[in-house]
Length: 544
Ligand code: PEP
Ligand code: MG
Image (cartoon, helix red, strand yellow):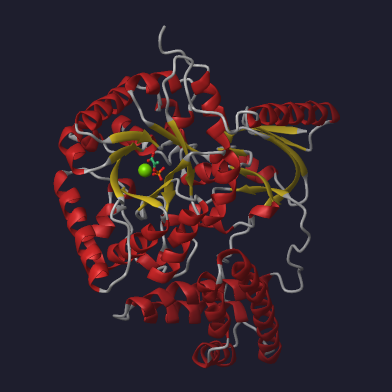
């Protein structure tokens, strides 16, 4: 048995086989070949396999996310058959007597560059698609003959690190737990693991990568951050017991369903849930949350290989609003940038992306993207109780510009005779120290604040939330953060606005009493933590 220690980011236990995460970005070598005909045959087989896989992905996407979102995989299938693309690969193999992997990679680079240089945003986005299909073909050339993992056994996914875009694309039905060698506990990958209700450990260290092999039995303790490779019998028994106790505790919490979020002395608070996509709605409904306090809409963009259209977004937002049947749903406009990178946005590489071109800064610079999202949101507002929230606010002037765009979008919808609700609440994230400090100026302009403690902590303590090495310096209970929250709460209430917290700190039950005393009106947490926070609220007595 070998034991590794990382940081547990979602407390739960998992036992099962390891699956090493395979990235489809193959490093391709140029190899001279004598038999170019054999190379062309290998290429044909790899293309055939790629088409079959894409067909399966298309069918799954069609079932799970609908036709509009599945369509991209149909386009990928057509791209694999494109004459120009295929002529280029064939001619490189034949004229240069090289391996098919190399010919595909060179063609992919040439075509991607050509698409990227086009004026039209739609054609520019094809650049990421051609890379995607080419990586798939190269992957299939490399594992020629190897079977795709077809069995449905759940596995422990082990990786160096996982980008949020990689995490959302994992087949959730097959994931028992995540373990990454690097990464930090406030990263979006960690947040996703919590939302998905699966044990996760990050920062297991570089040596962990050398110790893992596909199919090896392992156990993950998401509470302590321990990973046991080939655990001995005693460890398996101990962890099985812990898993059963854990399940018992979770079952006990289920008894709180339907009960109120009220303290012993009668103070009430809303407990809402955070989601990253339409497919998390089931978990929200099961959690008995009073609403959705944060829908991270950027995941719609991360899951897609092109800008989601107004129709696609409208369908997703409408579905969430309808499923919540009149309960409050707060959808945050896209927060792309920093660790959430999307190829087709074509963002330039930055030295300090967390301090760079991110979230509302992208929306205000590229209003066509912003307006498309706002149109979809306002249209969907006719189907439920919508609040729209804007991320990364630092100034009054940003908010003035945002409100002007909202007015423009509403008046064009009105002109077109498209219905929308006239009671959509508008709010902002308080996730920069600047926003908290000028919260007295911002509060009169909005209906609500929602404190994003993940970023507020990063920016207040000057600690990169992606950097695991800096975690010892991150005091999530730092007085500066708590004072900024308290100041924002006072300023919100003095101006008739309400205030919630939607960062990970909202689920920290050692702070529930503090937040209640500050007058926080809503705590929005991963669906898995709703009942835990309800339990903490019901045990609090503010009269003492
Ligand atoms: C936050 O910063 O606390 C937040 C909720 O937003 P995100 O984690 O998506 O940056
Ligand atoms: Mg944030």
